[in-house]
Image 1: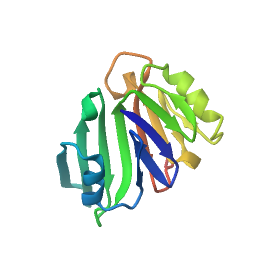
Image 2 (image 1 turned 120 degrees about the horizontal axis):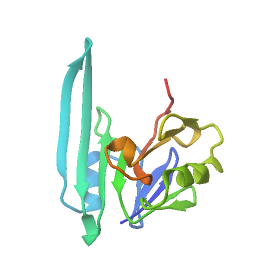
Image 3 (image 1 turned 90 degrees about the vertical axis):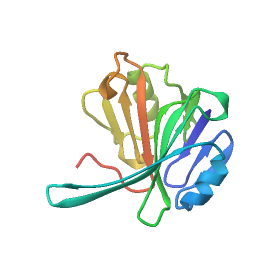
Image 4 (image 1 turned 60 degrees about the horizontal axis):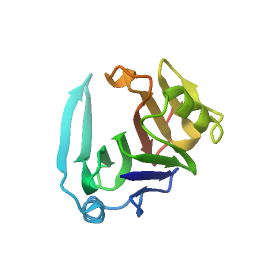
Length: 156
């Protein structure tokens, strides 16, 4: 699977553009593959946290693993990517086999406002977070996780 991200606008999965704000049922139809719904609600320090997402694995006969995230109105608001063939963010291309620091430096060319913290980099202007494989439980120095969202992302 090939993944493209256009900050604040849309994601593209294998050439299929999906705008942020698209209804969940429509996203599922556009992707057209099996998924697992993963909706959770739990309390944390007197706050109710609601998580609404669909989990996809190995769609289109390729190795990939990602979650589509939705708001309370079931509109697409984020995507968590754990594996795919290629990634492009505003035209900057990389893979999950690339070294984490190299990916971070490539993205720095389009968002100089990055915030870095132990194998995790936040790119506020891109509304993007990346983490190394090691940061998400692996052992390698390569890219291990990418999160993009329609809303503002900060290190607060």
